[in-house]
Length: 163
Image 1 (cartoon, rainbow, N blue to C red):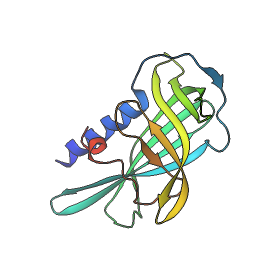
Image 2: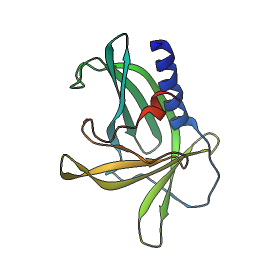
Image 3: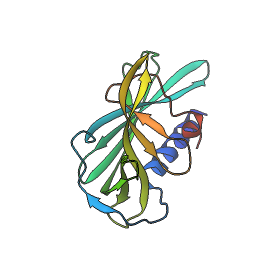
Image 4: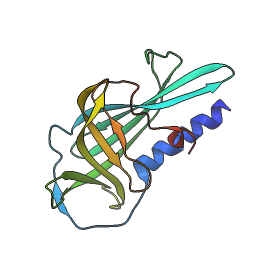
């Protein structure tokens, strides 16, 4: 069961990192500094043989790469994380601006130009306070959020854990 769960999570993260969508034309761009760096997200919790496992993801955005790391712990406070898998892709970014001046960056693999989805910065409430979050939209599922510091709000959900 735990092996199946791990395979499901790895598959979900691989889909996040390697999935392809339609092509659009947009202005090529470098990723601004406020997007770059580490972002962390609470993926969710599973139970196996009466033991809770808590999963987190770490996204590292750089000008030419996107790294995704899946971590797991038995601790509800998300301490003592153990890395399960790390994926890294060479990427390019394309600036997209809506008519309402909302900015997002479409992420594409550098090798075959396949779309991975889009990132944007947004404000979401975390424990009653508005906090900057990195919103990821793959165009298929709900938008998921990552933050500069790890917390248990805005879990990515079971669809990521059981993909």
